[in-house]
Amino acid sequence: MPRPAAAPPATGAASRAAGVAALADELRPVLVRLGRRLRQEPVVPGLGAAHASVLTSLGQGPVTVSELAAREQMRVPSVVVLIGQLESRGLVRRGPDPVDRRRVWVTRTAAGDQLALAARRARTAWLAARLQRLTAAERQVLAQGLPLLERLLAEVA
Image (cartoon, rainbow, N blue to C red; front, side):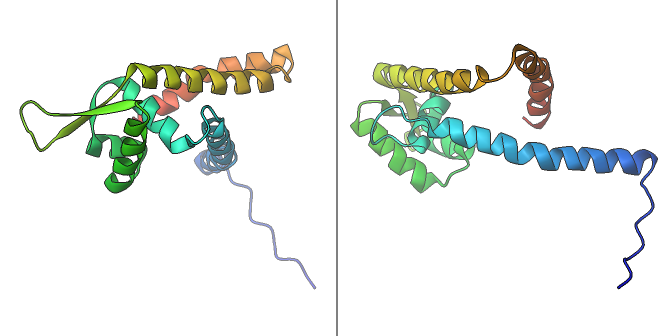
């Protein structure tokens, strides 16, 4: 059976766009898996990745439930449940807005701050152990790419 004719090689802008798309296609799942794996690093029994993520988000200061839901890309009812669970453990507290009593602000407690720090340390330790498996030259390549990843994030934020 004859094979179909190959497409002519892309040139110029089309070739660059195809290369960028191919890089994005390879980079995206790696970054997703890395982020997912880091979020899964256990800190406290019974406290899941979503709890740790909410605690991390609260490190940026008091936030409303709806703002937190938007940050976490979750539905408000789901965030309310998580906040209730964190509050029952003494990790967050809720308080009314002094101007608009319908709004509720959520903040981390001192215990929540300590747990968030422990979570960050656990994730950093997990990543550091994996980085140790690389050569010094490979770690240098990663270090040189960090500013580029920061630029990518800054442009979408």
